[in-house]
Structures are given as C-alpha cells and as structure tokens.
Length: 358
Image (cartoon, rainbow, N blue to C red; front, side):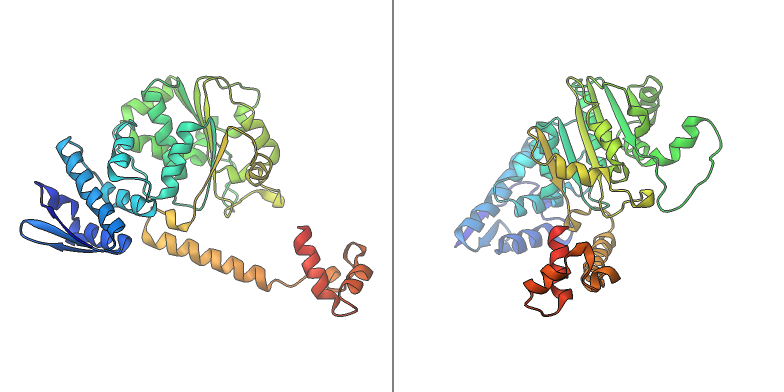
C-alpha cells in the first residue's frame, strides 16, 4: 500500500537529527518513507502505513496544541509506541503532561518504564526490579514529587539500607546525619535534579522530604506519605517485612532494587528476593521488571550488563558439583538415584535432582 500525506507546518521537527526519527519509524514499522517537496509518501503493509500516518497526525495535533518535546523525549516516545501497538504518540504525550515533575519533564523511555509509571499510579505498593540504569529510582522519585506537588500526599520519605558496596568504610566523622549522608547521596541527586535547590533544602528542613536509613523506619506508621525504599536488594528478610508493614492510610510505597548487585554480608538472603517470592500473589501489589533493553545511561552500560549476565550464565553452566554430591552421597539419595538411572552414572541423576529441589 502506498499513501501520500500533506506536509504540515513545523512537521520537519518530527524528523529528528539527520532524519533519525524517520529511520526509526521505517525500521520499527517496516515501511518506506519518501520525503517530497510538498508531501510525505508512505509505503508498506496497510496496517503499518496507518500507524505511521497516525504518528504524523498526532504530532501535528500536539504541535498545534503548543506541546514541546525536550531532551530526546520524542525519540523515546516513538520507541515506546513502536514496541506497543496499542499506544499512540498523542496518548503518551498527554499522559506525561498530566504529571508535574517540578522543573523536569519526565517521559518513559521504554515500554517497561511506561508500565512502571502506570503501576505506581494505580497501585499502593509497587516493586521495581531490574539492572542498574533502568530508571527505577529516578522515576519513583519523579512520581513522588508529582504526588507532593499535586497535594495527593503531605510528605516524601526516602529510605535506603546503609550497606557498603563490597568495602568497609570504617568510622565516618561528623554527626549522625553526616555519617549516613554518603549512603543516601543518590536520592539527593534525584531530588536536586527535579526541584530547585532552595525548595529541596526547605522541604528537607521542614521534614516534608525525609531521607533516612531503613533502620529508622521501625515502629512508625506512615500516613499521607509517598515512601520509596531504594537498593532494596540489600535489605534482610526482617528489614523488608518491617518496611512493607509501615504503610498507613493514603500512602504509596515503591520498592526498587537490582538483584544482581547484592552486597549483604555473610551471604544472607536478600529481603527483596524473598518478598518477590512471598508477595507475588498478594492483591493490590504490582511488580515491574526491567532488563538491559531498558537501560537509559551511556550505551556502553547496556552492553556491560548484557556481558555480565552472559558470563554469569556461562559460569553457572560450568560450575562443578560439590565433592559430597559428586560422590553420590548427598542427603542419603545414593541408592534412590542409582535405581533411577538404572545403575548408570550416579552424578547425572544427582545433578538433576539437586536442580529441581532448589
């Protein structure tokens, strides 16, 4: 199918630098876009051509309505709508405009980020789990600021476990606040990025925004609050249970973490892993999962995360069995496994038994 659409005023801003957005549409919809002096020719399957035409119509409508795209938002929206046929450019733009994020305009840059924001809007407790750089904490802080500025909550509480990343920092000088601030710095960075520094300082001084280690949450009931627990993979089972039971009336909680970066000492099981298993069927909760395709940092970060994941899978596949299991004597299962394998290699049967039991 081939169709020509008229070029409207300022439509050229849709094309992007060196027509990168047009190339994105061509690749994502499997169509050809040919620019003429007075029209744009679209050629491809009828359904794909219709979607491309809708993009141009939505962009024209948003331009006439005074909508402006900032910081690569247009490219991000196009990637989201290409990945999800049910959404439109107009719907994405208007959904973002309904949220007030202070001095920042925040748009989801992937389908999973959009689902994450929608989950936070529609649920009182959301778990965001995924690798570094996927926007879990930043988007949660953005939604908290939006709720505060819209007066849907009276305060924001940001919590984090005070755990070093694989090193011992020893005794830090200063007051209690001085000692815990280094652990909470990423949360401060997100706040100062979205609000004027004077406003952040005023909110902190009046405890409208509170930043504290998770240990300070015990015994509290948090009403009319937007509560964020960051780096939740470094909570213990007891800390996680304590945190998720703090929620009071008219409050929301967002728990974020990366289960591939657990820094708990003595190989304790992560409270985030346990909560994801225990709470997955609880009504009213939502779990949003991210992967390396959602990374919005430097393009190298996405490749690095993928390389680490592949290395981990390769190592796990090559890992030898412990001596006690290799001898076929683990848990008194030797005779059962020998029978199961008809007197053959005991190790093969035992390996499969161990995998299924774990």
